Length: 189
Image (cartoon, rainbow, N blue to C red):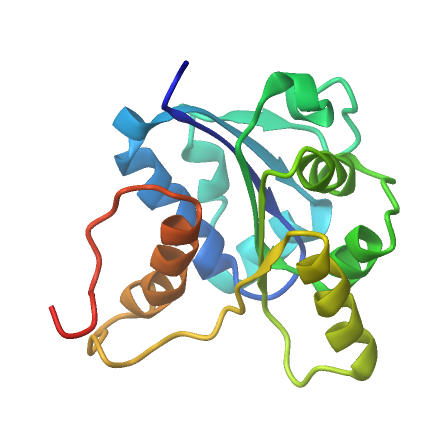
C-alpha cells in the first residue's frame, strides 16, 4: 500500500489567491510525502490571481498536473483513482453551495462529490464574510457529509510579518487536516 498522498487542489474565483499560492508553494516543498497533485482552476480564479497578486505565477508549478475545469476524464473524476484529499482554496460560496446540493457541473464539484462518496478528506477553505443562513446551512450539510470547513481566518499568535506568513497560518492548518507532516507554529511548543 502506498503511503504517499494524492491530492486535488481546486482554486475557485473567491478572493484570497495568496492562500492558493502559499498552498502550492508548500505542496512543492512536501514532494517526498506526495505521489501526485492535480490542480483545477476556474477562469475567475486566474483573473483574481492576476488582480490580487499581479502576476500569472500559477503557471510555474510544472511538477503538478493541471486539468481543465470541464475535464471529466481527469483521474480524480472517479473514485477508482484513489485521490486521498481535496482542498478547495479559496472556496467561493457558490462552489460550496453546488457541492452542498450535490451538483456536479464541473470538475471541481464532481471531484468533491467523489471525495465525499468515497469517505475521503474534503477541505473547504472558505473565504467570505459575513455568512448568510444559506452559507451556514451549506457548511452544515457538507460537515454532516464528512467534509471539513476550514475558514481562511488567519491567526496572529505566531507573529506573522508578511502576507505570505499570515496566509500560511491557515494553509498550515489545512495541510495538518490533510495528514501531511509539516513544520509549523504549534501552540505552547
